Image (cartoon, rainbow, N blue to C red):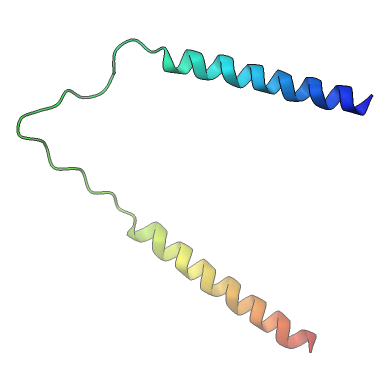
Length: 73
């Protein structure tokens, strides 16, 4: 009975994904900006704050793991 449940869940999910992607691709028009002549410079994305937070959290996690390893000895 478990095999039947797995297969029905798998195929149900597959059908759902096929239906939703088909309707998502069927949008009228592009909806985006029209190209200009000359092209506009791309906008800057501020990734500095997020990257520094990720780096700091990685360092803190690494230090915690090192301390835990030294305590286990």
